[in-house]
Image 1: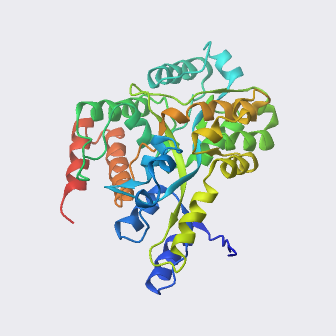
Image 2: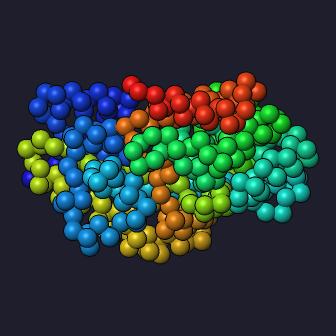
Length: 354
């Protein structure tokens, strides 16, 4: 049986899939992230992979990545390619600030923010709200987002501490005001211009820095992902899902397994500069190479996979959760309310009946 692979612009993906399903002609297999796939799973549109794979096949994937495809008691996809954030740092700016090493915890990151600002007049880093990175950081600090019933679980002491962390950095001028308006690409641009000491992102951004700013790449060091007290590392996972109603149902599941098996994941990772989701593939010497800057970035990123997970759980209401939390955090940053009131208001807004 021949397989036809069709690339669809991400902005058109949701509409095209829903129209195809409504028209009775769904695609067999789709490459999605867990957050969007969860919306389809909530409508019972995806095959339950937990019923199709035995325990040995399930155990090939890293547990934290396998869990990223779970919604309730159903597993709606197979983890495919992965990225874990690393810390990319300008060692000359670190030296100018008198910092002997890269920060590795959020406490050390806050100290670096003060030191860099005082001694160089620059910012240590630019956190952004265009995705889930800041939300993930708060989970790493101990905040729980949702309870078992999908209701807000973040109005706690740990939640207040996490909110207060970002409120303090903003109000004391230790992170740029662009935090509220710009995306992650802006952080990369400012790092490439020598305006930021650190940037957090996947190894793919190392290649971008090498191509766009070779002088900055020449003074760049690589460190592990910034960690909170939980020790958890965040991962961005793309998965493969098989749609219910496909006329090639068994073949669709087989294709998902074929593309995500050990040899094929390893081959794909070598070409695409990604990480595989299976432990055997990551054990390949390719991911332990010292080599150049990109090889070091890949090695550090891969070493984090056993502790990595999708920290923002799949939920059909994820976009709403993120929007509400960021809106209330911004109000607290501007001093309109304190961290406790902002969290209480966020929980009340999220939990109110539809």
